[in-house]
Image (tube, rainbow, N blue to C red):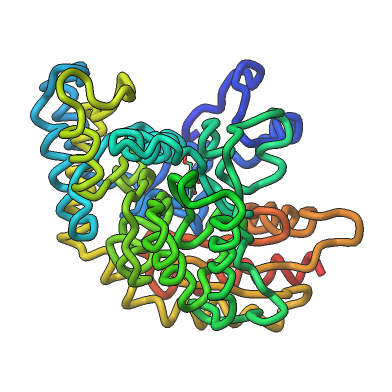
Length: 443
Ligand code: PLP
């Protein structure tokens, strides 16, 4: 042990690890992360691991940022906690104003949550409450998209479109339907940025309107770029068409910006980069650089007014979390958004994007690479599955990368990259070079 090493836990039994193969991990604990700084994690023994995933798409400003940790420490000494039900504390209002300053014009009302999952469920509830407040109570149907991920609450899981996330839990929300996903490898393989084909897939919303009646549909929720199911970048023109159809039928458009928010696409939010603004936008992760859990939902002013002014007296929206606007999270958010601006993190992402794109696409000729996708500082490398063993090849690549000192993320047979936005060219070279070696070794 040196002064930078951290003791390993005495027992692994009690902790039920989320979204994990508990048996595998507890049988082979070599992949433990104990410390982090800048672009890197460190194992308990002090071995450095380059972070190619910004944790889980969340530490956009890099790890251990002093400005954020000091703000949290300071706030803990001033006000550890105060309720926000029928009470307020200054820093929650300040944090909401900072978020509203960054969201697209007109989305100026901000509801705080503690995670992306809570943000998704909150956004869906806001959509339902808004229609009801306007006397449009038949609008109860929620439309998601195949391969969409909106967290693990019952709302987000129902609207989400990932089979394995749903199958264990039986009946979910009843009034839900799904658009097709936008992944068209036969036409779009190895596209750079937004793929050229597939805008017409948005027109399926018209079919759902014809099937269910627009008067029953409250909202459509999509990720601007789907991350968790393997980096699905929207086809050119797709979101614009979705927006037009929603407008035509009085349907609210919700973006789940949990991974695309806060600079990941080289702009504050995905809405800006992709040129189409939603009515409601969820966020989490990069909001506090993940230093304290926090999520948020920003809504158009008219939606807030519809619910709040539309209620004569008393509580207008029967929803909230004990920790909505928690002082430590609010302090972390303010410090993070300050860093985001002073260091121009979206600008940094934009500046390095061409280099990143070339590096990621240089893997094209590596064995078993069947598609590569990218946008902003995101890369998805899809591998051919091993016969009868889906996911096994990518998992082997993940383990090899980790053993060689690089953290990547895999979903199915897709390797997803989403480094901190402070990444520099030598990090890109190391990340992609290590990944290439691992892919070749698993050929
Ligand atoms: N929505 C999207 C688009 C996500 O990528 C995630 C997490 O990866 C979530 C929601 C869920 O967020 P959380 O795990 O904080 O609940």
